[in-house]
Image (cartoon, rainbow, N blue to C red):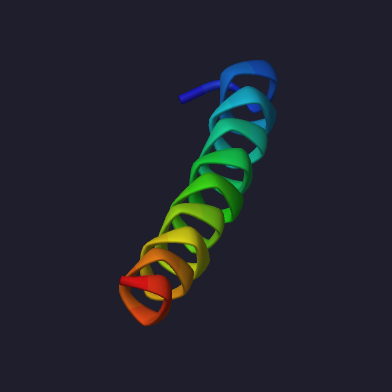
Length: 34
């Protein structure tokens, strides 16, 4: 893998992890409300 695609991959992976964390937090929040 060349450096350019590696950088893009790492950035996408980081964004995905942040989204997953956000979803988990929202899921926990909605469970507490119900």
